[in-house]
Length: 486
Image 1 (cartoon, rainbow, N blue to C red):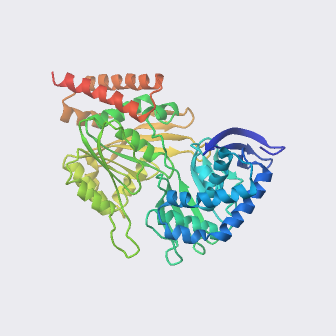
Image 2: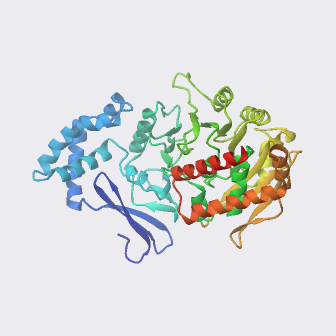
Image 3: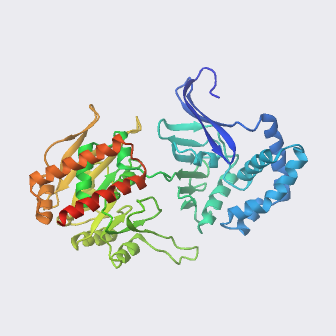
């Protein structure tokens, strides 16, 4: 419950294995925003006894040795110790029914073998980020509606934080030690994890979890959230249909990957797609001919690494029609990608840059350092932006690339009106389509108008599921292709 004198912002509940968790979000008298959890089914008295059971369980069983022995087998660990925990529950709660016993078992396992209350946060679909800065401070979360919030969850000590990091790493064959105090990893659910150990992080050990979206974003979601306009969405769809390459840039957390997912969902069903990522984040409709691939770090002996470059080169031997690459970071990766574009493959990728001008600068200077004339292989640059004050994500700019490699912005976001305005016609885009598809300007505008109507149909009928969007795309392309073949 929110404290007296505070301003309530929101409240809802989530359920984890029959436990009902109440979430209260409020602002305190000093203006700080809070995120409090409370387990509805478990009273304060029960919590005191649970602490006693935990102490007895830990004194009998070496949890650290369990984790080492049963690396990557969390479910078998839970089954193995469920009986021991049930004996302790019967000792302290002799009259509990089966449902209550299961609830208490799950609570004890989560706190002693799992990630504790972090597991509750992982189930809240409104959260994007979960961070532990040190044992001296509570966990903070980034909420989709309210931004950064201070929780009432504490990890008791630095050793526990390190244990969580070690456990996460072991599940996927990575390690974090004093000699290797930095770790990039992911949970088995796909959530991305970064961990650091003291004294590299001088206040204490840290964990940062960026949650993997279980429901992929669709164009309907972006329209309803005000992220992009119907007209801009139609242009992007049009570019994808006619096999033009697109680069999506933006700052951290601006929605680049979400937009990449949306862009890829417009790909026709009869084409082969290869996606290349460090950690799997792209989710496409089942109807698409898609092969997802992931990089792999070297093992502790320094062997077995599979880099982004390895996968990009390998993808060209897999006869792809479209290549999706999570992010351009280095010159050699970019060179191979641009070579793929120039040899007839459509490429979709992301880049860290805050606007079109900065995107051009990053591409043409070290460490990427691509020659300016090669940039004309990209037909569209799409820039995403997140307003850190309001938390809103918006498409900031849409630019075509001229034959000499110079970007030319034709749509720009107006902050005052919260709209994406068209500054000029994308004449270079029209010329490219005319060259490869034989469509004149009137035909192009008619096609764009048809796509706007179809996107409005999706929005009006709340077609937000990636599978439903895929079915609509499939029907569109079947009809469109049959019309073109008559």
